[in-house]
Image 1 (cartoon, rainbow, N blue to C red):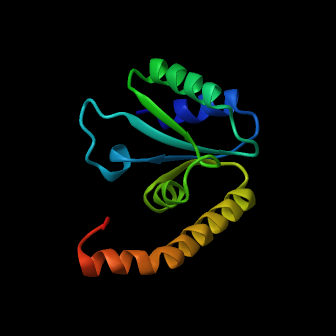
Image 2: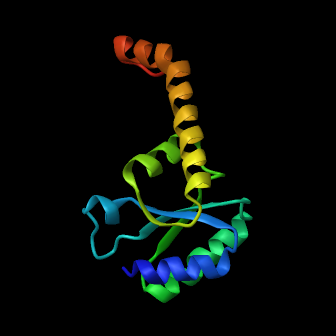
Length: 131
């Protein structure tokens, strides 16, 4: 995988890009020859889903490997936290905007865990999710 190609391509096609993260098996080190490349972008504005899909397909064609491209602003609280905690930054041109987003994402995740603590404890005690 060529990080420079990824960064150059995404910067060229997403002018207000703040940061690019890579996550998943390629970062964990357990990728297989068939593994895709998992990328997350942080831009000043959210990208339409169709545009994000198109960019992922174009990038996949250039890299010769499937690409999953995720817009962090549209991602769930849990997904954001996973990308930030386990991923690596490929590029960041606006460190203060990136740091602010990360702070809010972690804060949202902590609040979610606080809100669901009772539910998770109940599941642990009963061993059941439903019923």
